[in-house]
Length: 112
Image (tube, rainbow, N blue to C red):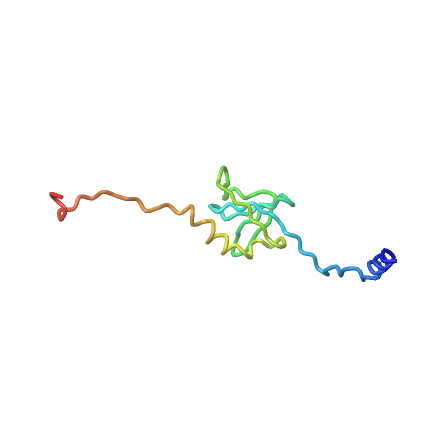
């Protein structure tokens, strides 16, 4: 009797609601030195152009990636450029050259 009760109770539960809009998580390569994204799913580049963002299968000749360092970035949806200020702040800082230490003899420290 207990088996029949649990079976009936499990079958009587309503199905779980499915979200209306399911937003998939997209993965991108982000190239901090060029400020360019590459989508894994669509194999397209996303780069800044004339105050906006351009999506294309190939990069223009003015942008070269080569063997730059890249970072994998995940974003909910395809509009990864909305998080670009955060990505620039987070990842571009490691590519800023450190100030050079230059030796300059100073007369104040002669003899020490």
